[in-house]
Length: 129
Ligand SMILES: Cc1ncc(COP(=O)(O)O)c(C=O)c1O
Image (tube, protein in one colour):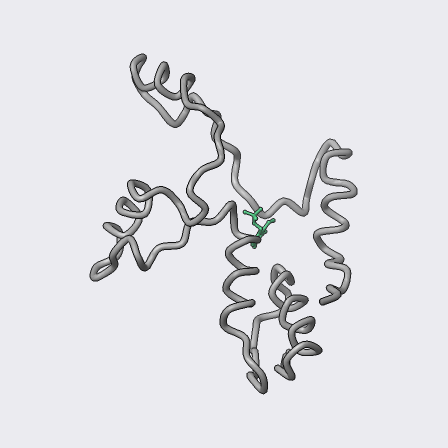
């Protein structure tokens, strides 16, 4: 499957770390790792955490905590991803089927637009604007 160039992401990856003021940023001020913990024992525990390959759908403990935020959800309903782009990709890939019509707001983050158009060529789904 060939993807069209994601123009907004290409612009950001080309320039966002080269400028003094990034007016295209859509995120929030980043946390520091130290902001995730509020006591010395937790800080030490964080520092000792190995940066290992983790369970690909999220650890059982994390999925349990996330599921607890949603009435009726269980850890089996939860898929943890490495950010929004991976979640968008998995969702689009799994949901879009042949002859589906996909409607999305524009302008927006156009990742799913490009994925859907690529799957359009793959499966016959149509993307309306
Ligand atoms: C609206 C929106 N969705 C998704 C993403 C991708 O998210 P992530 O970097 O968490 O994969 C971005 C990144 O800029 C975004 O702005």
